[in-house]
Image (cartoon, rainbow, N blue to C red; front, side, top):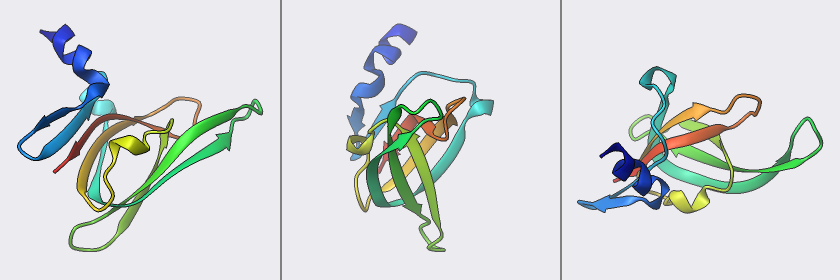
Length: 109
């Protein structure tokens, strides 16, 4: 059963008007969660300490009532996993050695 869940990993699961992307299952204690309305999706390229380049995606999440904005830079170009203006919840981990996060679960409702 676990293999079946992992096999669907990054394909995305759809149901009841929401989209969920799942990638691996790290320990819950290592996860950070951010949620809000997606207000910026910006793919970019940064240079690592070894002078090589790396794709990243900056995403801003605007809180539903307060309007506070949280920005997260994700490793890789994951812009196709976010929908501008949609309320989205993301569980992510930080990637050791890089200043970016790896999305584990993305739910848009």
